[in-house]
Image (tube, rainbow, N blue to C red; front, side, top):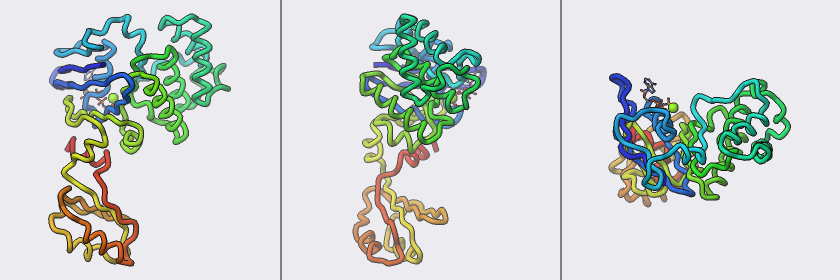
Length: 295
Ligand SMILES: Nc1ncnc2c1ncn2[C@@H]1O[C@H](COP(=O)(O)OP(=O)(O)OP(=O)(O)O)[C@@H](O)[C@H]1O
Ligand SMILES: [Mg+2]
């Protein structure tokens, strides 16, 4: 179990971490969410001993993390750190060796990863000649080459096309299924909702929401009715007491109601109203929970 316990860090007057506490276990893939400047990168840097905390500690199975432990960790930093002039394949072999692998084994693992990530034909190209998204993929390969037991990725989906994002998601899912502990930060909440069972949301250096996504959604005091309508908007709403907010994006109406509100009659009536299409009643999305948690 990788445990962040009371992580606290200030830079002058700026409080970057303010008692940040959460944990992630083997086989788990945790989405680490938070607004810009909320402390995600600082937390990840703390895992690798790259900052001196004012208080608190990161532990692995209850023990302080040693440099030796970190050899079995993989990190994809926010500031990507590849050697621009080195060939992608050489780079992975080199980084694998730094993590204690045999040179030949590291090269084999690196080439296999490039293949998995759709870059088999780019192994002989210097990294600087690859596009931004393909450099991202090599950066992921660099974090994975030594088959880490703990994987920490700072916005790995940034700049990837939809196919690259799916490839990345599959690779991470596979690693977690094989027992790795995976944490990644992201601002793409719909993707996180699809990919992660667990999330932690940080705001101003503190965890404000944490747990199983399905449980968090079910525990929300709110439910969401969404529909498109050519005429019957007000007619439906007039029959609902206790509406919290309504909004309209030009196509779709979104109505937030208390979870305990019995909406069956209204939904049934709306269903037979020819003006209304695609009406749905559901728990809030992760994106909606996030906005409430950091409001
Ligand atoms: N080296 C530093 N010197 C001064 N302030 C810093 C330093 N590193 C981080 N901070 C401050 O700490 C806070 C948290 O920053 P951090 O980079 O952890 O945020 P983040 O959640 O990763 O944001 P983003 O989503 O934009 O990547 C910010 O206010 C930031 O300005
Ligand atoms: Mg960051």
